[in-house]
Length: 104
Image 1 (cartoon, rainbow, N blue to C red):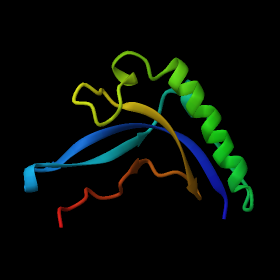
Image 2: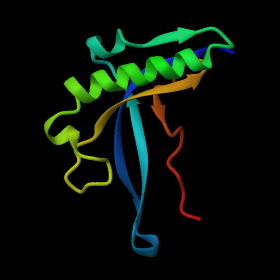
Image 3: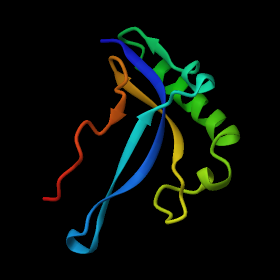
């Protein structure tokens, strides 16, 4: 199984008002040309290389893209979302999660 590295814009969204309110993280695959170009794939057996590449990309994102309002952590009420490099088995999804979570 191939492994991919891609950049997502991640936000913390309100899931519902149950138990005083609960939140979940959701991300959209970046369409920014500079960030799309950072995406890459690795053959099976190269999970470590994919993780290392994601860490390198994240360092670049934190230095050049996660500035101002995007520098705040996702759990801050002032957060405007963050750019994150993520790894996946196979091709990256267009967004995550695939379905909005339900309160249990």
